[in-house]
Amino acid sequence: MGVSIRFTISNVFSLLIWATVALLPASARFQYVIPSILEAESLLDVGLQQFENGNYTDSGATFDRLLSDFPTNQATTTAILLAAKSAYRRDEFERARTYLNGFASKYPSSGFLEEARLLDAMALEANKYRTEDALNLGIILSLNTRESAQTQGMFNGIRLAVDRHNADSRNRPVRMVFRDIDGGAAATRRAMRELSALGVSAVIGTLFSEEALAAAEEAERSKTVFIAPLATDDHLVNGKTYTFQANPSMRVRGAAMARFAVLGLRLDSIAVILAVDDRKISERQADGFLEEASRLGATISMVSVLPNEGSLFNLSEALPADTLNQVNAVYIPLASRNPVATVGGILSNLDRMNPRIRVIGNEGWQDLPQKAHASTYLTTYGDEFWFDPASESYLQFARSYRALAANEPDRLGVTGYDVTSFLLDTLGGIEEQSLAQSLLTREPFQGLGLRIHFEGSNVNQALFYLRYRDNLLALIR
Image (cartoon, rainbow, N blue to C red; front, side, top):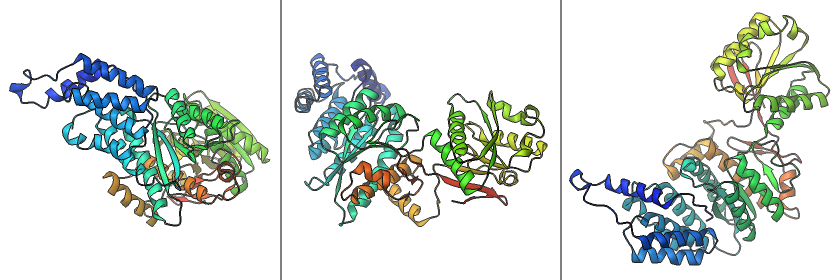
């Protein structure tokens, strides 16, 4: 399992000392200190260097010596975890689990506890399918403690999708091969190189666009299919053949909404209003919308770029009274951190302007409480994520997720499940085409919370379309 450790030994030791001493009775707290042994610290430094250089046999031997010669010292939990990681990287999954056996009970306050649990789960899964016939699925996520909850949610979803696939005896079994990308872009590139060298069928992962961009570079170099479940960067797949973006980019979301407005709702005269935001979400979506709507022949009667979100509360003053009377729809993409208040301000201003107009928007209009007011304008928007919590397929997934994780699935869990299911279903259907070509041409995929349809592009083009009508919000396509 790839890892880039970034900490100072002294800081880790200080944390371990404090965590241990805090568990002691008050009378003993200043009588017992875990010994700091210079030779143990030196061995840990050597082992870390060997591990980061990819010498996993040597690093394992070094950590074994540290644990044997100095069984109780400030480096113990660090050495146990890295010994397990070294074994995992040598494909010695049972040995990795042996190191981690009893870790939680022995070191309940360790800062590495969640990382140890996740590594143990991955070693268990990896050991299930070791036949030559198994397909290797690469997974790249960070075990950094700041991201552990998100990584765990995504990994749980991926794991359940793999389990579902492997439960069908007609399918070729899939083995998960995990690499830790804690350390950012450099660690991500190293992980991708290692997975490519192992001949994985595809790689899925990263939580953020920065790591996805680094993974994409290596994917193209090694001709390894990489699918990013969350990245929204508009440039991620530019000029790429083997990189795929399951989460539609901002420009693609705007373009998809334009196609739905013009081809689906038959709107041919549209105004665009947007407020500048620091993430440029509204601008990028508006750019995509304008380009696609114009290409499809719609008339763009007005584009109003407002300096900030507060300007949306004064639309009736900022725009001439009859501005919207000449169009049949207005597109307002939002990137608000307080959408309820912002939408309330927009709709109140539209009331004062009294246009007979349809409002179309983006995910910023999602599931708002002012359904009656939004219904006045038949407000319709596109969203990349939507699920029916009462559907049998979702309820079954939620039961499996609770049994695995002892908590409710979140968006990351659903996303990991859907993207992995899509990828594995595509792998199973390949005949003469390559996986990259099959992803481009396969039929639309309907997951629990995602729709995926690349339509010849390397960016997912599919959204859910919802409408406020008769005081209700409903999925219309």
